[in-house]
Length: 300
Image (cartoon, rainbow, N blue to C red):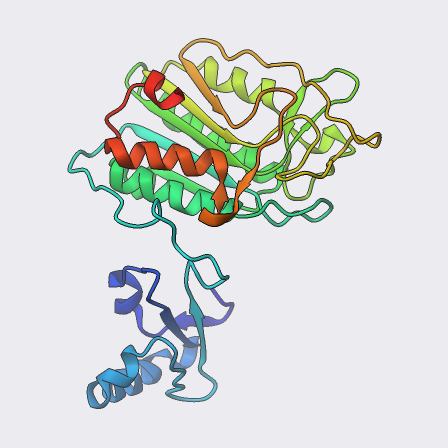
């Protein structure tokens, strides 16, 4: 989106599937010039279709046309084995709802390598392998605390619409922090500080919200640690440079939680795959089994 502009080549944005080799070129024009820009675009495209399909070409049909390139892999993230050839199901799980939070670019703390990529590919698995409709999935990258609360409320509302029938998925990749005085655990929004738990989202509160819902099942995947370390070797919050043994929060009801690390451990990146290690092996198991595995098998 760009204020005061509209997309010229709308048909391309609706039909193009991105792969590691493609770049989707979006052309935008000022609102009052869109009609003429589209006429020029399609006339030129008919004359030089090959030129228009070249992923690295920049072609302005009329100034001031604003064009740019986007690609999931444009930031140097080459696809790993779990990013491609994702199995596709014919089943439609229209009563399954998912919230995916991928926090990578923090304002006050070190960034979390590959968190956005984790979230994007996990969404692909939700749609292609698990058969969840796009409208049932909310992917939020670099979420603030209000973003996270809004998405949790949305999930709660969606699941409550189908009492006893709906299934919920909550996925989080980002920083986790402990309260050094109580050892309680928090997930950290991108505008939060590791030195102030009031800027975080209580894991216990999140568990309680999802545990109390009348659902068929609720599953959480947390690619974060709560010891005060970041995704790597450095400490995030503990000034004395030691990991804190966070108090394990207890899920209730039909909530099942898969976590990257125990209370005093660190969640690591998997550099070769450009994913969090937890997320990579989660996706690999789902891909190998085409999603046909028990919770016990997935845990192992």
